[in-house]
Length: 397
View 1 (cartoon, rainbow, N blue to C red):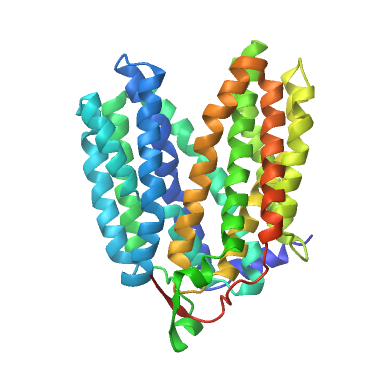
View 2 (tube, rainbow, N blue to C red):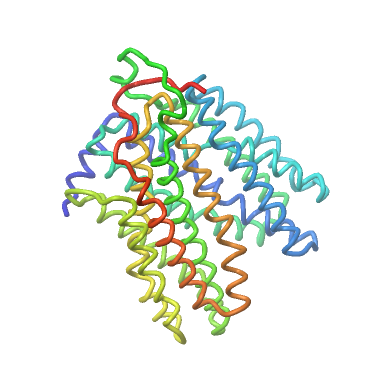
């Protein structure tokens, strides 16, 4: 593996700036969930109430993500960013003062109008980076996402602890507003110069939203199911052994595995199918629960699957960018975001129920089996190139 591929990638016009803006812009978004949860807990309400707000936000985001992407495809980036930035500013600047019933409804609306920073960065990266370099580009982007998730929740917890809900949620409002404003000013292209110059052709959604693409989205969803269940199982194991104080370090090291894996994968001479990477991640997660006792041995057991986290997720984005026409790329990236949300949303209650009933070890096994099972379901529907992504076309209903 050489560093040269990354140098060539970052030398492309606009790529370095887009990745840096994306890294910073995602931090407030990754802090939202824990900030809302801890705010509701500070009101004296239970975990069920906090979970209900989290679920409402997730449902709103799952519905809004592909809608935002479709509007980007049709009307451009700036109008969508302007509307969603204003919506986030309005919600987060006053959310701390809302009574719980109003907060519950408002959180769903805020989720529907969430700032589409994750899908927008990926859509624009696909436009800036040639097809042959997208694996490296999306690998590096996955590493940036890991760094954002390492920073955002930690800053949210620290803010609530030190400053309280009102100040922390106001800071989140400022952060989201600045993120949206930065992307509006940057205005990265959503299609390459070649795609813009070529004659546009209409394509029906059913021409690119094929069984193969749905199988790809299911594979992406399975990846986040494995990751979320593994995180919950790791936390539960540490709690069971009385090592809760090491939870932050343990999760940080697990994220570091993913960073290393993403870096190595991006530098390889060739990539692998998402089915191979996500299936491998699932298979390597199954035996983790057999390790008990010292949490440090648990982290050793998580190493092989952890190395495949970023490669698995980035491979789903890269494959989607090749399969979907440029004119529908925003909507497709939004659907990819929805798939990731669904995987995490389904995983939390299912893994939690398994942990409560039979223990964290079985939750690791369940996570791995779900990952492998989804890959087996996707396999018969898999197609390498449903629609040529090299033909700049516009999406139609």
